[in-house]
Length: 260
Image (cartoon, rainbow, N blue to C red; front, side):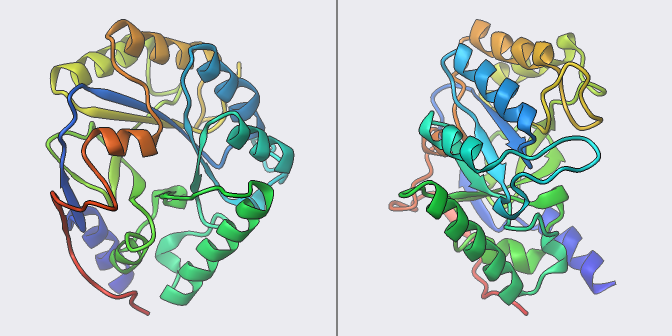
């Protein structure tokens, strides 16, 4: 009962509100868990168009094989970083945040930071993504003391006033979106001067139920570029909408300690 209330509160209580001040609409491409195809196909496709994405990595799962894919290995993580893509935190073990207490949450983030810093010296993990999209209010408040933003899985285009603790997204999934759907979303983003965050997992010719094809990814990129919408990483887009950790004007936060 309590866990359910805290999960609902995480969704509806804005914990770090920011009035968007972007001069143009924005699109960001993000990848969760980072299957190998998100590296070999996804990152390569973005680079073909001269853009970069944000890849949310749980370093403890690197190289693991599950039902749908193999997760990228250490060398591929290093290549992503070297080639200019943003790497975000996805906990260390892909742990559900709503099941963790404050100490376990900190340990997950610390272990992930240590592992990724060892692979990519000098890396800065400034943005977070909730594994499986599961958040709770105490953990959301705790994470926002460490990260600039947390990305969820609730659908929508970010516009007006955004909650940096639970950024809205659109699933770039083959089973859900047609090319026309993608173009419509890009046009809607342009018309409302919003920030469209697209996310997927694998990028394969026959994708999983939470993945997309290379063709659909290219369609999304081309639609954004035809609409003259900049495609930025999460870190870059936050700067474009007016967020600065060093200059917090315009950011209204709900203060709370890391609850047990």
